[in-house]
Amino acid sequence: MARLTPRHGRAEAETTRLFLLLLVGALLAAGVTFAALGLNHRHRLSQAHDFTTAERIVDLAGSSDDPAAGLTDGLPAAAGQRLGAPDPSLTHAVAEALKRRGVDGVSVKAFEASAGACGAATDRLRCRILVLRPVNGAPVPVAISLPPAPRPWTLSREAAVLLFAGLAAVLLTGWMASRLAAGPLNRLSQGAVALSHDLDRPPLVEEGAREVREAAAALNAMQTRLKALIEDRTRVLAAVAHDLQTPLTRMRLRVEKIEDETLRAQFISDLAGMQHLVREGLDLARIETTVEAVTPVDLDALLSAICEDAAEAGQPVVFTQGCNAVVPTRPQALRRCLNNLIDNAVRHGGDAAVSAVRDDHAVRLIVRDHGLGVAPDQLERLFEPFYRLDPSRSRDSGGSGLGLTIARRMAERAGAHLTLANADGGGLEATLTFPQP
Image 1 (cartoon, helix red, strand yellow):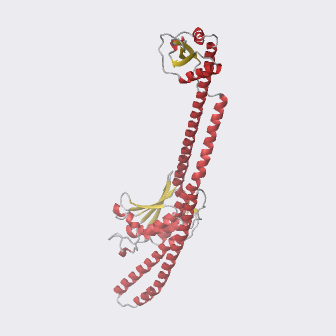
Image 2 (cartoon, one colour):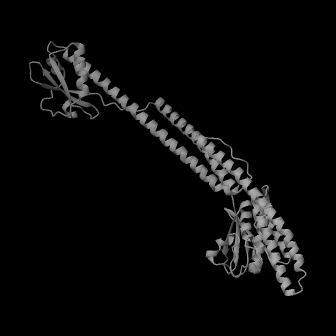
Image 3 (cartoon, helix red, strand yellow):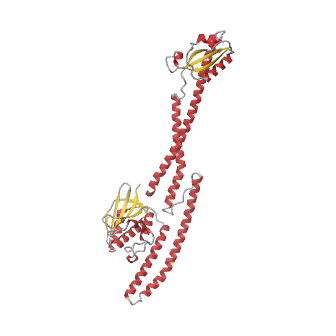
């Protein structure tokens, strides 16, 4: 369980990133919609202002028999003022208003102008110059001030409440959608990682999107096939090991009849090595098929018992330090791993000092010897099956080349990670690390 904690954190990070992506997309969509509505609202406000202004202008034009004279009498003259850019919207509004009222004899074109042309006291007013063109007369410019330009982004209190309620709904639905979308994928990822350490775990739940369900189904099928293959391999190796025991036993009986003591001792040693190799090869094959439940284990009590048993058997093994830690693990797998590490330390280093330490991140079990150590580039290769260092770790020392391989496999089943390093002051140090949640 502890080994999945960092990956669980990454899964939560993936969920958060998906939520943020959905949130950014929703906010962008809401922003574009709000901008479109605002621009449309501004356009309608502008049209309304232009319509009102056009009606005012037409009222002035219709107040006299001469529309141009009526406009010049009602609006300040703008002769000599600089014309700005044309205002097609206002021009169109005035032309339509004149047509609706049946006023003819004059055409009007609107231009933008500075506030000074209208005599305005504030820049908030919009100033326009209307160029009047009577049918039989010269163009006459007049000035007209319009209301301030509409501000589409101004929100009332009710609109602001609705906007924030909408944003809260986007946040809530985005978070729920990200959890629903990323949840099955995260569980699939965690299940795949757990499957690499335990083939006997329950099958993955096939849920979520179609692709995720198909991936879960494929992993479940792979788990079934792997279990079948490993069980077949174990049965074959067990049969081979069993069949080898009989001829090895007969050879041992015949060797006992050899009169030359030196030759007899050599044969007996070789036969013992062969029997040991067969047993360890079979143990290595059985690792993946061994079923053991995870239970809380008091590490200090376990280490103390293992060291006492080794010392009673005549091995120079001491338990030097505890850490008062209880971890969930498979106790038999952990015991087998520690026994192999202690045997390796005693065989190749002369002794074994066992200790346990803990910090905020991990619990570490350390088995140290005081031998010659190992070249740094050879440390990882010691975990390879049948790999031996020459001459210190040869067949003559009693090793089969499988002890550390089995120890690492057992460490993985126990939920720990096994590493080797040269200790300060000499010797080899094997460290079992249990990550803490």
